[in-house]
Amino acid sequence: LGVFSTGLSKADELVCAEVALHLHKPKATVRMCIEATLKICEWALSSGQNFDFVFKDIGILVCRGNHVVMRFFEDLVRKVAQSQYLAEGLLQV
Image 1: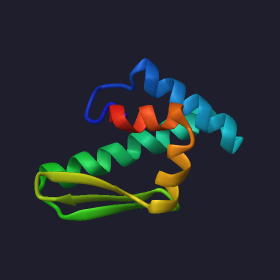
Image 2 (image 1 turned 45 degrees about the vertical axis):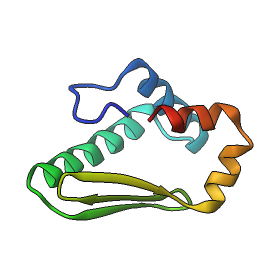
Image 3 (image 1 turned 90 degrees about the horizontal axis):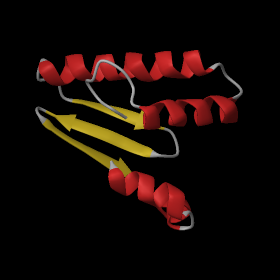
Image 4 (image 1 turned 180 degrees about the horizontal axis):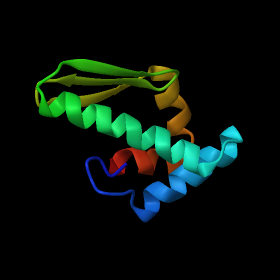
């Protein structure tokens, strides 16, 4: 997602819509959760906090000082490898 920008890109908006459809939640709720998470991440990074975001069944976003890396769980990587669309999306990030 477009981290630290003033809004979500068109591609990010499509992701929000897809997630909302899959979760049977309003798109506005999904967008609000994503934006709130990004604000927390921005605050933590700008203040030099060390933190991890754990995404169940996906992986861990590890933040140490100004270094950020996403560690994906092996099961997810295997599933993504079977879907070219998802694999290309992860590679673009």
